[in-house]
Image (cartoon, rainbow, N blue to C red; front, side, top):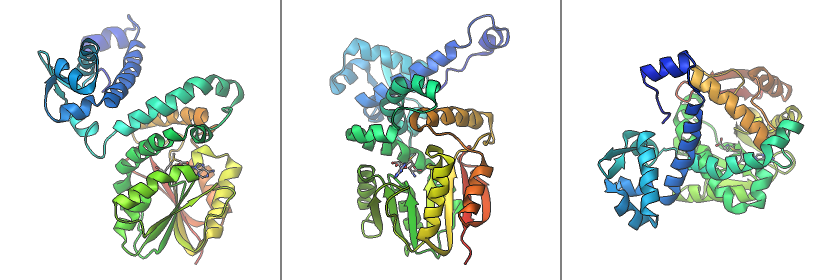
Length: 347
Ligand SMILES: C[S@@+](CC[C@H](N)C(=O)[O-])C[C@H]1O[C@@H](n2cnc3c(N)ncnc32)[C@H](O)[C@@H]1O
């Protein structure tokens, strides 16, 4: 939780600029690292079983007692734990978001062990040249042990956006969904659960699909969720679909690649088929936090993929050029900053 300055601090530090307000960002960065480390060691899961002292936790988690006590003390200041003397417990925030499901712990782990290491190695090159030497997906292919971490991170966000998405995308009456860059398969699984007659095919790079198959098996949907491992822009993506998802993929492609993606989707879909695009868009977001997040995410896409957040009008034009009509924009109120764009092939 961001450190919230009291009124006096806000007036003196932020309004009057008498001390460096940037210190709050340093605290925020430290909090991300500390939360990820605590999650890695199982601090939140251990405290979900009940309050404990750092000494008791250290024995269970194979940690140095004094160091763990210092970490817990800071996490209590940051709002992730509560402290009563030497005893720590989960705060309401951690109880809901660090051990609850859907939660954010896998998202923190993804940032800590994929995004930031990649950022450290590539951000300066990107700022100089406009793109990384390799995309984060190519880097993950070189570090396949981190692919599940990435997919579990994407999935953590997908679990939060799933219900708002399905509230706005009618899957009834559809028979075969293609989930382009569907990774973990969570959106396909949700769609299949909402429509028992629906089959789904998740297309993604081969190694990324392990999590989708695990999730499908856990949901009892292995017979209705299929996978195609390959390059969305070059390999066979199947055919005969009447519904398509392209969720959080356009930000990683160039405009020409997005045109090709939508043309390939149109070719793979039957007349009357609907393609749903999900992404973040430049300037979109009903609240300042969502707009700031989209600007930060946009630069992160540049660092990770040479990508960007696009304007809605660009995505709309690519869809129309590929033959999709009735293009509509839906800004998800319950997932601020996330936008759906739907387009339908003439019947
Ligand atoms: C940010 S993740 C989004 C996953 C999921 N659609 C979601 O919204 O949670 C982007 C996915 O697209 C896949 N992807 C990106 N470029 C691809 C390409 N050229 N071919 C196949 N998959 C690709 C990545 O492997 C990754 O799983």
